[in-house]
Length: 251
Image 1 (spheres, rainbow, N blue to C red):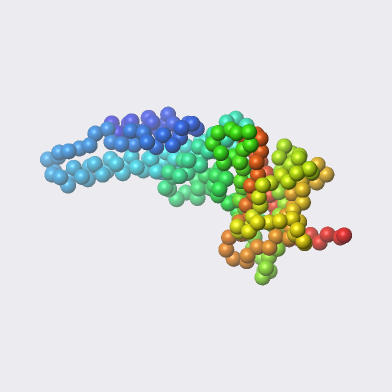
Image 2: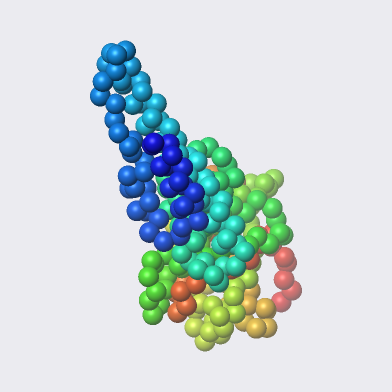
């Protein structure tokens, strides 16, 4: 009975993207009944009950979140405008419960979680990143954050890069008159547009692309570039990011 009930529950909820946290508190993840007596003695009772609970836990912490993550991510990327925020947040919540070791599933969760740094491993190649607001309900001004981990192999002792961020027009359009981002940090250190270091404003003239240069990274370890900004729309945004060796500019 426990098996039948949980299988029905999984099929009914693998595409659900609202109240996801509550799904994991469902009675379906508990045995329909607990065996209290067996002619085989107490050890037989314990073994039976453990077998049932292990089966239910396997579904709760592996099969169910895995199926839900695959379903929801597929729906999410098909059209990010169709309940995209709710679906992306649902993927991230399922990811909290997923205890499996499938890297593909872990990567899908990472793509939907704004607090997980997205790896940049190839120079000159643009990488698309989905930006999901960090607040859970729509506000007049919604919070966004994205993190990049620059991990490009380099022979240089002190690698330096240009980082280009192609922004949606709706985010960048006011950047000519005001700063589009709230805060930008590299490994926790605030980046400022001063001296030789420049953060180019995204404008229609440069196709709404912000360039950060020259950005020095560590040869080993994490290189976390974090950008925080606010936007009046509560929706999933897309940015494209790329890092490359600095291009020598003629004055």
